[in-house]
Amino acid sequence: MRILAGCLLLCLMLISSGCNSVDGKAADGVGYIFEKKDGRVLILDNVSEAELGKKWRDIYSTYRGNAIWLKTSKFGLKVGQYVRYWVKGGVDDSFPAQAKALKIEVVK
Image (cartoon, rainbow, N blue to C red; front, top):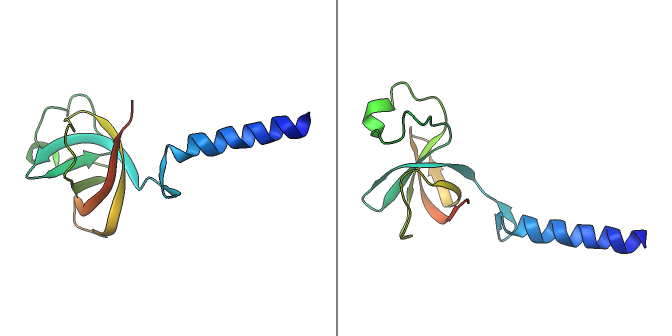
């Protein structure tokens, strides 16, 4: 009986972790979509409610946290959504960082 319960628990863990991965790879990051522009989204991991609705140029000098512009063709993404993302290829180490999105998933 314990073996069956252990197997069931392991299966549930594997199924639930599959929702947070792409081909077994954990998400490269999470954050809020702060801005959309020219087929890219700016994702910030440490944004306050007071900063939402502002432009990057208004907060960049005081912002503390990770920031990345992701090039994407995904439709339906909206400013303010909390997302998980996976990067395709390398990441440019500018600030904000820049990369191409492999996948962007809205977290509900």
